[in-house]
Length: 496
Image (cartoon, rainbow, N blue to C red):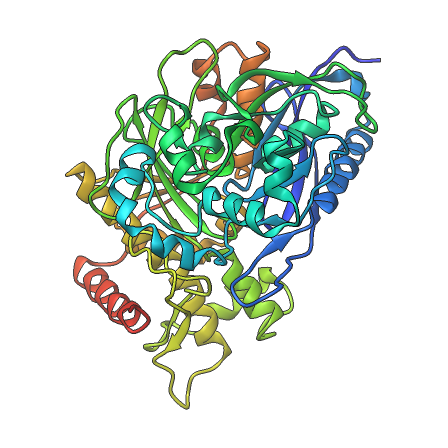
């Protein structure tokens, strides 16, 4: 049997769970993705079955070990990255959820969040976040108030709550460890991002008891070890945890202040490392914790802007409109026309995210004529994915008071060359696609590897990261300005 060791990375995302094995050079040795159902009990509500997610994690672990033909004993450490604001409430004794996971996209707490407006300054100052149903705190409150006996049982210390990372860690350790990392905790709207601790005033505002929340830890270091996990020996360290967007920033080797990445997933998310400096946005962005490394006293911060719908818009074309049969078909379809001919998709299916923060806004397809066809709608969808990121980048530049030199990209959609060229054209800066585009997985693996000494430090990780293709802007300044103005005019039509 080989003595070679590997990192097992779990990427629990919005539409599915990816499990990967990476070697010392961070090369993917095996990868499995298992989708789960999106549950929509009411308009604007989004849920996942947490038990299905856990079952898919177990299936994925078994599948990658079999695919790579290695022994589970060769796993040096496990890293977890996850859909961030999604929350699970579970029974401490049975480990079973009391209700479906409430997904970050869910808007059921919109009315409650609207009543919090008088507390907006306090919440923003402590958390770096705006008041929005997006974040976890209002979802936790909803669960405690709407699941039978939940609040009473929480007070009696019978329940646990957490983001998906905390739920998976609990299951991986057979209920021995209830922890989360600073990046995930910073997205709950319950952690003070200066102290890195749960905040008493915020807990009171959202009426969440601290005893059901996980312990906050650094992003790299041993959280616990496996116990009674199907297919794995006991004692494997879980040594890295980060929310998916922070993990992608780390996986893109954006280790220094001013470096930025954009992840194209279900939504699209631009993050820029601001170092140990907590930069407060005046342009509608979020200040968030990027990570905290093992042995480091200080937190690393980031500016963030997210568009709630990105790749999900392509899924909408595929599943609801049935314009395409497979997501990969959209590039060829969009290339059938030279321009969108004035057709714009504003993908506000669950409201507008940064920098607008308008949860009541709804999607629209505007500018259509009798000559509009499937290719125009496909092209408008790709352009929307790129254009909404421009709004975010320009807000970042406003906060920074300087131009950003380039953006590193990752996620499934970055294999679409037309979309990447559109992104470079509309941003007006180079877009770099790395050799390893699964940056979220890579970030989780990097953090876990650092946590057990699998890699020596960020200097070694910087050498691993390599550019696969660089997209330079081709649009003239005039053409870019005109396109951006047409886009903003279209967005204005769905805003309140």
